[in-house]
Length: 230
Image 1 (cartoon, one colour):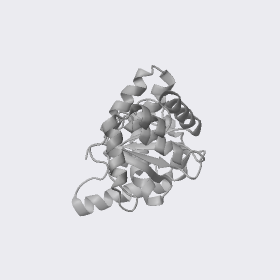
Image 2 (cartoon, one colour):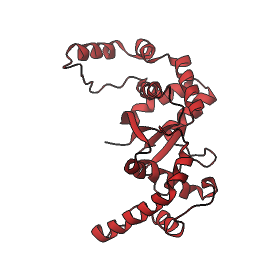
Image 3 (tube, helix red, strand yellow):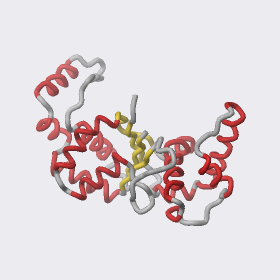
Protein backbone atom coordinates (compact mmCIF):
# COMPACT_ATOMS: atom_id res chain seq x y z
CA UNK A 1 0.00 0.00 0.00
CA UNK A 2 2.96 2.33 0.44
CA UNK A 3 3.28 5.27 2.78
CA UNK A 4 0.09 6.99 3.82
CA UNK A 5 -0.61 10.32 5.46
CA UNK A 6 -3.17 10.32 8.26
CA UNK A 7 -4.76 13.31 10.01
CA UNK A 8 -5.35 13.65 13.74
CA UNK A 9 -7.08 16.33 15.77
CA UNK A 10 -6.92 16.97 19.48
CA UNK A 11 -10.24 17.88 21.05
CA UNK A 12 -8.61 18.61 24.41
CA UNK A 13 -7.18 21.87 23.09
CA UNK A 14 -3.74 20.93 24.43
CA UNK A 15 -0.63 20.98 22.32
CA UNK A 16 1.03 17.68 21.48
CA UNK A 17 3.90 18.27 23.90
CA UNK A 18 1.47 18.91 26.77
CA UNK A 19 -0.53 15.78 25.92
CA UNK A 20 2.60 13.65 26.06
CA UNK A 21 3.69 15.14 29.39
CA UNK A 22 0.24 14.67 30.94
CA UNK A 23 0.15 11.01 29.90
CA UNK A 24 3.85 10.26 30.16
CA UNK A 25 3.89 7.90 33.15
CA UNK A 26 1.09 5.72 31.80
CA UNK A 27 2.65 5.84 28.33
CA UNK A 28 6.02 4.66 29.65
CA UNK A 29 4.42 1.83 31.64
CA UNK A 30 2.29 0.79 28.65
CA UNK A 31 5.29 0.73 26.34
CA UNK A 32 7.45 -1.36 28.69
CA UNK A 33 4.63 -3.85 29.33
CA UNK A 34 3.93 -4.17 25.61
CA UNK A 35 7.58 -4.97 25.01
CA UNK A 36 7.54 -7.58 27.80
CA UNK A 37 4.44 -9.21 26.31
CA UNK A 38 6.02 -9.27 22.85
CA UNK A 39 9.18 -10.89 24.19
CA UNK A 40 7.19 -13.54 26.04
CA UNK A 41 4.80 -14.34 23.19
CA UNK A 42 6.93 -13.87 20.09
CA UNK A 43 10.49 -13.65 21.42
CA UNK A 44 10.68 -10.29 19.63
CA UNK A 45 11.27 -6.83 21.01
CA UNK A 46 8.49 -4.28 20.60
CA UNK A 47 9.62 -0.84 19.52
CA UNK A 48 13.19 0.34 19.83
CA UNK A 49 15.84 -0.56 22.36
CA UNK A 50 16.72 3.09 23.00
CA UNK A 51 13.14 4.04 23.89
CA UNK A 52 12.63 0.92 26.03
CA UNK A 53 15.84 1.69 27.97
CA UNK A 54 14.74 5.31 28.42
CA UNK A 55 11.29 4.35 29.72
CA UNK A 56 12.76 1.73 32.08
CA UNK A 57 15.01 4.41 33.57
CA UNK A 58 12.49 7.23 33.45
CA UNK A 59 9.00 6.14 34.50
CA UNK A 60 8.33 9.78 35.36
CA UNK A 61 9.71 12.76 33.52
CA UNK A 62 10.66 16.07 35.04
CA UNK A 63 12.57 17.62 32.16
CA UNK A 64 11.33 19.62 29.21
CA UNK A 65 10.74 17.18 26.35
CA UNK A 66 12.69 19.47 24.03
CA UNK A 67 15.79 18.88 26.18
CA UNK A 68 15.83 15.20 25.21
CA UNK A 69 18.09 13.84 22.50
CA UNK A 70 16.38 14.65 19.21
CA UNK A 71 16.24 11.10 17.80
CA UNK A 72 14.85 9.82 21.09
CA UNK A 73 12.29 12.62 21.21
CA UNK A 74 11.15 11.98 17.63
CA UNK A 75 10.82 8.25 18.31
CA UNK A 76 8.84 8.94 21.48
CA UNK A 77 6.47 11.31 19.70
CA UNK A 78 5.91 8.87 16.83
CA UNK A 79 5.05 6.02 19.20
CA UNK A 80 2.75 8.24 21.24
CA UNK A 81 0.75 9.48 18.25
CA UNK A 82 0.63 6.37 16.07
CA UNK A 83 0.40 3.70 18.76
CA UNK A 84 -0.41 4.84 22.29
CA UNK A 85 -2.88 7.65 21.54
CA UNK A 86 -5.29 5.17 19.97
CA UNK A 87 -5.45 3.15 23.18
CA UNK A 88 -6.42 6.17 25.31
CA UNK A 89 -8.29 8.15 22.61
CA UNK A 90 -6.57 11.48 23.22
CA UNK A 91 -6.36 12.12 19.49
CA UNK A 92 -9.12 11.66 16.94
CA UNK A 93 -8.25 10.09 13.60
CA UNK A 94 -10.20 11.91 10.88
CA UNK A 95 -10.24 13.07 7.28
CA UNK A 96 -8.74 11.42 4.19
CA UNK A 97 -6.01 8.80 4.59
CA UNK A 98 -4.18 8.58 1.28
CA UNK A 99 -0.90 7.33 -0.13
CA UNK A 100 1.89 9.86 0.11
CA UNK A 101 2.56 9.69 -3.64
CA UNK A 102 -0.81 11.37 -4.19
CA UNK A 103 0.69 14.53 -2.68
CA UNK A 104 3.67 14.70 -5.05
CA UNK A 105 2.12 16.89 -7.76
CA UNK A 106 0.58 19.22 -5.19
CA UNK A 107 3.95 19.60 -3.50
CA UNK A 108 5.39 20.64 -6.87
CA UNK A 109 2.63 23.25 -7.23
CA UNK A 110 3.35 24.61 -3.75
CA UNK A 111 7.08 24.81 -4.52
CA UNK A 112 6.38 26.76 -7.71
CA UNK A 113 4.72 29.54 -5.70
CA UNK A 114 8.18 30.34 -4.24
CA UNK A 115 6.33 31.46 -1.10
CA UNK A 116 8.69 30.42 1.70
CA UNK A 117 6.00 30.45 4.40
CA UNK A 118 3.66 28.33 2.28
CA UNK A 119 6.43 25.86 1.45
CA UNK A 120 7.47 25.56 5.10
CA UNK A 121 3.96 25.00 6.48
CA UNK A 122 3.15 22.50 3.75
CA UNK A 123 6.39 20.62 4.40
CA UNK A 124 5.65 20.33 8.12
CA UNK A 125 2.46 18.38 7.34
CA UNK A 126 3.72 16.27 4.44
CA UNK A 127 7.29 15.48 5.51
CA UNK A 128 7.14 15.73 9.31
CA UNK A 129 8.27 18.17 11.98
CA UNK A 130 10.21 17.55 15.16
CA UNK A 131 9.09 19.02 18.47
CA UNK A 132 12.72 20.06 18.82
CA UNK A 133 13.10 23.46 17.18
CA UNK A 134 10.77 22.45 14.31
CA UNK A 135 13.68 20.58 12.72
CA UNK A 136 13.41 17.73 10.22
CA UNK A 137 11.72 14.72 11.82
CA UNK A 138 14.30 11.93 12.13
CA UNK A 139 13.76 9.15 14.67
CA UNK A 140 15.66 5.89 15.18
CA UNK A 141 13.39 3.92 12.86
CA UNK A 142 11.45 6.52 10.86
CA UNK A 143 8.69 3.92 10.49
CA UNK A 144 6.34 6.76 11.36
CA UNK A 145 6.96 10.47 11.05
CA UNK A 146 4.84 13.09 12.74
CA UNK A 147 3.95 16.53 11.45
CA UNK A 148 1.90 19.24 13.09
CA UNK A 149 0.69 22.81 12.75
CA UNK A 150 -0.65 25.12 15.43
CA UNK A 151 -4.12 26.61 15.01
CA UNK A 152 -2.58 29.86 13.79
CA UNK A 153 -0.31 28.01 11.37
CA UNK A 154 -2.97 25.81 9.80
CA UNK A 155 -5.31 28.79 9.55
CA UNK A 156 -2.56 30.57 7.62
CA UNK A 157 -1.97 27.51 5.46
CA UNK A 158 -5.64 27.48 4.51
CA UNK A 159 -5.45 31.15 3.54
CA UNK A 160 -2.41 30.48 1.38
CA UNK A 161 -4.00 27.50 -0.37
CA UNK A 162 -7.06 29.58 -1.22
CA UNK A 163 -4.90 32.53 -2.27
CA UNK A 164 -2.84 30.53 -4.74
CA UNK A 165 -5.16 27.72 -5.81
CA UNK A 166 -8.70 28.51 -4.68
CA UNK A 167 -11.09 26.53 -2.50
CA UNK A 168 -12.06 22.93 -3.25
CA UNK A 169 -14.47 23.86 -6.03
CA UNK A 170 -12.01 26.37 -7.43
CA UNK A 171 -9.25 23.77 -7.65
CA UNK A 172 -11.52 21.35 -9.46
CA UNK A 173 -12.62 24.04 -11.92
CA UNK A 174 -9.11 25.30 -12.65
CA UNK A 175 -6.77 22.34 -12.34
CA UNK A 176 -8.78 19.24 -13.19
CA UNK A 177 -8.55 18.06 -16.80
CA UNK A 178 -11.70 17.61 -18.89
CA UNK A 179 -11.42 13.84 -18.62
CA UNK A 180 -11.08 14.05 -14.82
CA UNK A 181 -14.18 16.24 -14.59
CA UNK A 182 -16.08 13.87 -16.88
CA UNK A 183 -15.02 10.89 -14.82
CA UNK A 184 -16.40 12.55 -11.69
CA UNK A 185 -19.67 13.38 -13.43
CA UNK A 186 -20.09 9.76 -14.53
CA UNK A 187 -19.26 8.45 -11.07
CA UNK A 188 -21.85 10.75 -9.46
CA UNK A 189 -24.44 9.81 -12.07
CA UNK A 190 -23.92 6.10 -11.38
CA UNK A 191 -23.68 6.47 -7.60
CA UNK A 192 -25.62 4.09 -5.39
CA UNK A 193 -27.10 5.48 -2.19
CA UNK A 194 -25.10 8.63 -2.73
CA UNK A 195 -21.76 6.82 -2.69
CA UNK A 196 -19.31 6.59 -5.54
CA UNK A 197 -15.69 5.58 -6.06
CA UNK A 198 -13.09 7.01 -8.42
CA UNK A 199 -10.29 4.63 -9.39
CA UNK A 200 -7.00 5.79 -10.94
CA UNK A 201 -8.01 9.35 -10.17
CA UNK A 202 -5.25 11.73 -9.11
CA UNK A 203 -5.55 15.35 -10.28
CA UNK A 204 -2.50 17.55 -9.69
CA UNK A 205 -4.32 19.22 -6.79
CA UNK A 206 -5.26 15.97 -5.01
CA UNK A 207 -2.90 16.55 -2.09
CA UNK A 208 -4.03 20.16 -1.69
CA UNK A 209 -7.64 18.97 -1.72
CA UNK A 210 -7.00 16.35 0.98
CA UNK A 211 -5.39 18.96 3.22
CA UNK A 212 -8.24 21.40 2.57
CA UNK A 213 -10.78 18.73 3.50
CA UNK A 214 -9.01 18.26 6.83
CA UNK A 215 -8.69 22.01 7.39
CA UNK A 216 -12.38 22.56 6.65
CA UNK A 217 -13.31 19.91 9.21
CA UNK A 218 -11.36 21.52 12.05
CA UNK A 219 -11.91 25.16 11.10
CA UNK A 220 -13.77 25.96 14.34
CA UNK A 221 -11.54 23.93 16.65
CA UNK A 222 -8.64 25.94 18.02
CA UNK A 223 -6.21 23.07 18.22
CA UNK A 224 -3.27 21.61 16.38
CA UNK A 225 -3.56 19.68 13.14
CA UNK A 226 -1.35 16.59 13.38
CA UNK A 227 -0.25 14.23 10.63
CA UNK A 228 1.08 10.71 10.89
CA UNK A 229 3.21 9.68 7.93
CA UNK A 230 3.83 5.95 7.68
